[in-house]
Every structure is written in structure tokens, then in C-alpha cells.
Image 1 (cartoon, rainbow, N blue to C red):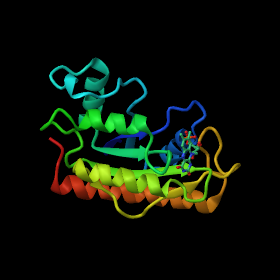
Image 2: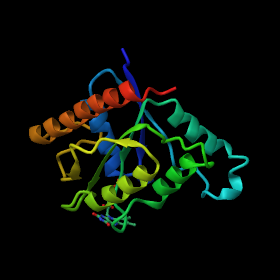
Image 3: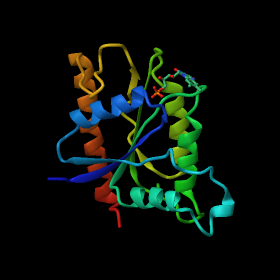
Image 4: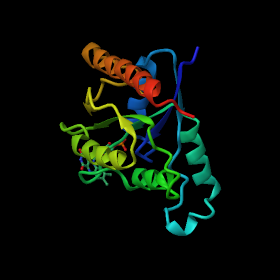
Length: 189
Ligand code: FNR
């Protein structure tokens, strides 16, 4: 039984993305009544206000996917101490046209992986600032800065290290609690 539909964004367009692998692990470890659908960002043109009166089909689909989700999850790498341009572009599309911001009051969580030790911490702060302005209802704790160590994750998203698996399972359980709390006060129409 599905309690909540979660649309998830992968901030990377790489065919070998470690964040895509992390997303598989998160889905594997999440409470079973969360239903996940990826919201693609790689097919979007670059946003311009010129499109505001007539969004292209890819951008309409993006907004419809968010509108049809109970919550959104961002799984993103860090690029140059911020978020990848492709992800920012998708957020810009979804936040517009003015007055039709798709993220308004939407429960959201942020997580990311990098080979380096800071595990996307700086990118996540940057993303949090953007989502704040978009009025998404972010889970602020727990935070999750994942160092993608070889051998800990399989391609299929299995987690071989028990403490990492427990941490990610807890993160997703807390996200479910967060979704329920937010939607109790701010139900999706
Ligand atoms: C990176 N990488 C990186 N890592 C980091 O910890 N902080 C950073 O600021 C950056 N900056 C950065 C910029 C660009 C353009 C690239 C391509 C890479 C390295 C990055 O963490 C690594 O490539 C990850 O594997 C990217 O995640 P995905 O695409 O594998 O999910």
C-alpha cells in the first residue's frame, strides 16, 4: 500500500553517477509505503522567462510530476561547491511562471554523495537556500553527507556496510515522518 508518492531528483546527468546508485539504496531502505518516481531533468532546455506564457512539453511534464507528488527528494552531487547547473535549471523551471511555484509547501529532503570527505555538504547548503526561497518544507534533520566509498554500495543499490545502511534507513524513516507532519498541516490539494 502506498501512503505517499515521492518524486525524486538526481542532480547528476552522468551515466556512472554515484548519486543515482545512492538513490537506489535509499529506495531499497525506505519504508515500504513510500512510492518513488524519478523526475527527470536531463531533457529540459535552459530556462528563460520567454517561455513563461507557453512552457515546452518537458517543462510541463516536470511541473506535473511535482504536482502529482506528495513530497520531493533531492539526491545530488556537489559541483564547484554548489549544485549542478542542470539541477538548478530544473528548479528554476519548476518555480515559475510567477505565482505557480510547484515547490510551494511541498515536503522535501536533501541528500548527496561524493567521493570526497565532505560528502556534498556545501552543495546541500546551497540547495537548501534555493529550496527555502521556493518555500519547500525541508526536513532539516537528520542531515546526510555521504562519502561514496568503493565497496560500500553495489550498482543495484545494496549497502554492504551495516552502519551506513542503518543511517540511510533512519534518514528515510525520518523523511516519512516529516512528510506526514507537513501534510497534516499543509495537505496537498
Ligand atoms: C566535481 N566534484 C566535486 N566534488 C566535491 O566534493 N566538491 C566539488 O565542489 C566538486 N566539484 C565538481 C565539479 C564538477 C564539474 C565535477 C564533474 C565534479 C567531484 C564529484 O563529487 C564526483 O565527480 C562525483 O562522482 C559526482 O557525482 P555523480 O555524478 O557521480 O553522481
